[in-house]
Image (cartoon, rainbow, N blue to C red; front, side):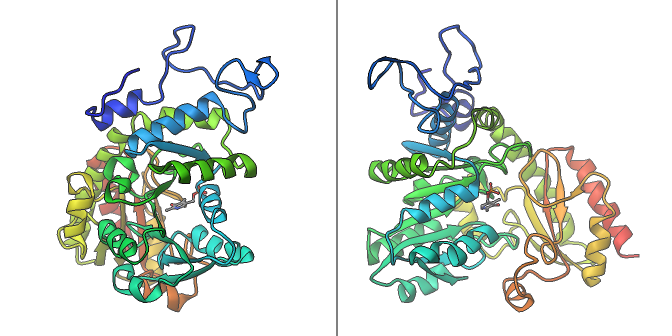
Length: 391
Ligand SMILES: *Cc1c(COP(=O)(O)O)cnc(C)c1O
């Protein structure tokens, strides 16, 4: 399949990595073989030798991810967390990293409780742009960005961070966790970052039935180093999970656009309602980083995640989240079905109250992951739950 550089996202989503095999199968078969025949010692018949090192389904997925992120190289791992682990494992002993404070809980845990075991120390800040010049040290090797943050959806100007970091030391790697937007809404490699990562468990697979992680880069040396670790550590996805994720990403653009359109309607409704204290949604003109959203996200779309504070405290939040008909009370996000949760007692329950409230995670904050059900039905569900929780 000869894709052209000018092919648009939807064309790449359908065709990148989607090869037709020798039988003419339009959809690649699932290749379960762990080993591949060699024609003479150390001369494999084709590209593959042993399935941990590389597998046809994983390769197809990696090619598709690279294409969608405008990168030259893609790699897939057994989870988003394994992807993070491999990147941090690639840092030399005694390195320093700087990370955005509101980072995904598992990433924070890896920085503070695992990477430190091989001497990697991390500084956290909620304002990279202001604090980076003071935080970068001689041994700083990596800057970690998540945008929008979870669950308060603050947006960081990625190009500006890259500019600040590379002026100090162009060897420092800038990594963006792009899980919340997906490659359809934003391509951080376009803004000069070195590595973009995703928990493909969320939007990329999109059907809440695979745990998997991916990364993309344009830098051959970074790719070779991380590919070496992918094989050496062995945290690889199965052929079936690779195949399912590849199938899922073919509809990414349709799903994410629909979720963002519904999310905009729901956020606009919540923003004007008296029973709501505040709404965090990057698609609203009232969002504090709306100017950055407009230049960083496709069509200025806000994505499928919303959080809002409900009047009536934790009780009202609990009532709301148990009064919906279509939204399911569950952790995770980015699937076809709408989910909701209370971060203070669920995804962010492990963070001390003071620290969590400092970044806006109050007991009355509700997080919505908008799925691809009908927009009006979802809005109606939100309206009824709001009525039920404010009685
Ligand atoms: C879920 C998530 C991760 C971790 O991914 P897993 O696939 O669950 O290991 C990392 N970053 C973000 C932003 C996430 O939402």
